[in-house]
Length: 128
View (cartoon, rainbow, N blue to C red):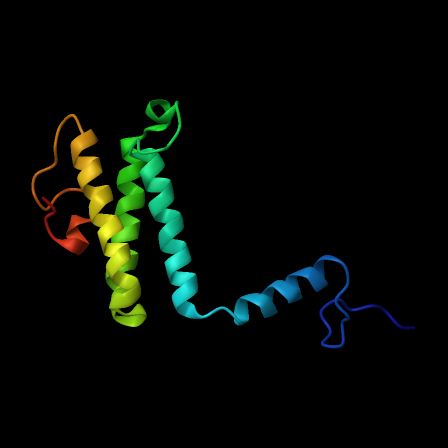
């Protein structure tokens, strides 16, 4: 009597399994610097929308400074940690974008944070 074992090593990928396998092979070909910068750009874009910088007539309605603070802090941590690995060619523009977001956040805030206490400033130092 034979039974099918989906955990066996000779399992042939079908349907969704084949698609996942292809995605794994595809991502394995992407250099780490691209994965890091793409993640940073996604964080940067989301933070820009949340800080009210969206190029949209409803930008003010999309503003959410609590969410923006979280995204900017995550971006600051990523950029700071990744900078030595990705080099100044890639880190420089990310730092510039991060600084612009930090300044936009400060401008959008009704009650400004103390220097060094703004979003991401524990990683970047005070931004003014």
